Image 1 (cartoon, rainbow, N blue to C red):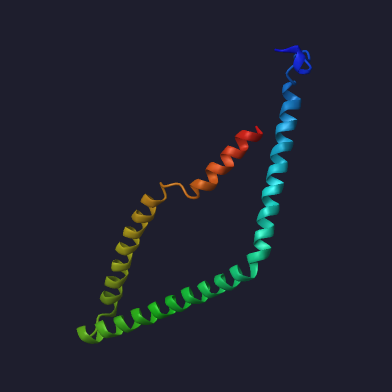
Image 2: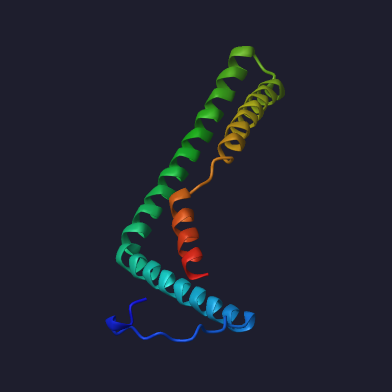
Length: 134
């Protein structure tokens, strides 16, 4: 290098021992997660009331749907029993079999979709940040 530029040359330093490097890395990771939790807390305070209202409405909607579905099934069973002239057990077993097949199909759909990773953008951002700190 050019000595006339005023740059000071220092002797090469020793690499830090693994214990101090691990301490520094863990303290950097702790600071990162503290900042991340602080940001999450700030966003949660800003949108907490709205999120609570939406969660309450979604819960009420799902409850109403389940109750409506149960009444629909009850009416369907009564209609089928009246149409067949009796045989409650056959009607209820048929209805439960239909629901079991539907549940199995839905389970297969969910099982196939779980293979795709969720929040891939967030995972990638966290991975990049962790690589930068470690």
